[in-house]
Image (cartoon, rainbow, N blue to C red; front, side):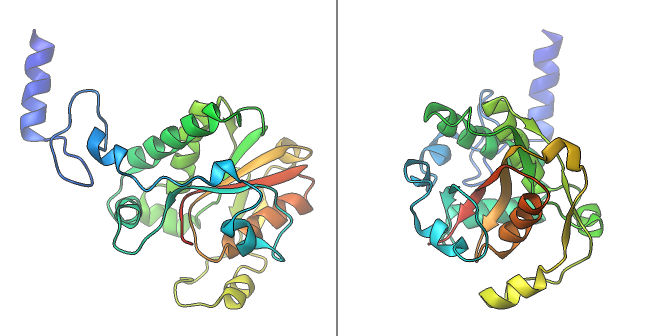
Length: 230
């Protein structure tokens, strides 16, 4: 009885609201209400993982295999609002929930045995210190639980890079030159790796990481992001 009282008091002082619509959440809901989860712009990339527009983006940049994204990115849409929450509102639990939701889809479609390990794209330590966490890592943690895979922070950034927002595809690739290095060769060599990030635009960052992994003995690398544009 006392526990229920404490919970009711905490809910009153710190209300739990949906991060998209602002509705009060039920006990079984975490960051998003059931209505908003049901209206997320979920993609069907998992049905054509090697033949889609995201695969076209990375052609010539890396020899990765499957390329998928959980949500379709649209400017001003729910996917952009979620990414904004992750980058600027300190919501690691949201990133993990999105990973769990997509992991269940992948699991239901037979992907659970495709990989040996999940590796997140790293942030520079200075940027991670300012943000408080790496949203790609927490997305990967959600995936790892749903797919029963180990997550390994196997890549690190060697240097800080300026924002890629206003850069062309070619400029982004040059900006990523020699940025990443494998931090634990023995745990990744010979492994099938699922490389995860928050968003794919040109694919330059993901391909730079994938090339480092492949160049250090990874068996193969597939890509998954929270969101990606057309």
